[in-house]
Image 1: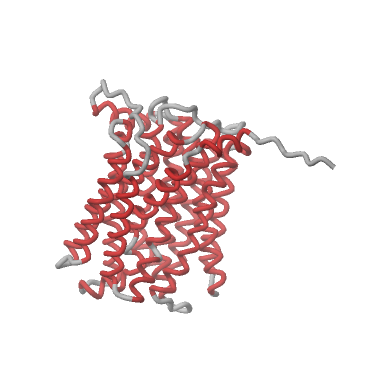
Image 2: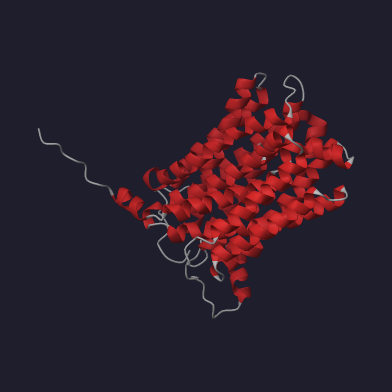
Length: 411
């Protein structure tokens, strides 16, 4: 009997021409940079004890860093069409490493928060550059998958930031954990220098302010506004619940220490595989279908965490929470790239990251009174309401056919 080999599909052929070493490097350095912003979350009690502040005040170390990080996407996003991406990312990682090392030896809590905020600004240079790089590396049919790869790396960075420092702190101390992350960023800076030299697609004949004006112009387009608002609601609900989950797990009936909380949050590494797979589904079943599936998964995760009284249920809820967010992100980015005017896709992606992270920072601050007045139940109900609002916006953005991949070129 003669064996018959299957003919390769178009996607299979595309996979052969993706520069995988560069794509994996971009994803890895993005993961480390984002983890640097979230590294304080599992060690709030240790930070509070060291600086002599209340446990709940320690969360401002995260709020300051994440807010500065989010706002800086507007600074760096338009620049991705004008400056070499690998140099932008590498410089950001070096500056961030220096600031993290300085933060570990801050003389007071106020200085600690301020230095971490500066580190958050530097951190944004890395994912801004790498997100802009990915679609330039991708064949036309695989932009969704490479968007998924870098988004998966970004949210995996959140997971690692909320887990690894807790584990290292349990073994050593919190300062060693912070300095260790600084060293990883230095290694990432060196790795980024190996990335391809790509020509900037931006029109350098125009003043730089025109790039920022183009990004602001996205707020005048109803389709892009709906998708940006979807990200705001999703991240407000997701990161609001994730932030206060630390406090919930330290209380009865769990009584987890920082190492246990850190290990639990490793469930978020599901996104390393899940986000690229979700991205590959976009041209097959349509971006709206992927978004709805992701939002449903997030809701299921929050509901499980709300009623969980057993560690296995907590683990399942955490896994669903992260998996749902990973599934949504590449699909929304593909929809946003299709809705944005030609030449604005890079700015649109950075703007989306900005508003999502601003929403996460806002949730960290705004849910403080909810936690104080309504406890864990209040936080969970607020998270569910935010994700349901995201589903309403997704319904408004839904089209009758799959959203196409953005054409090659530009970003």
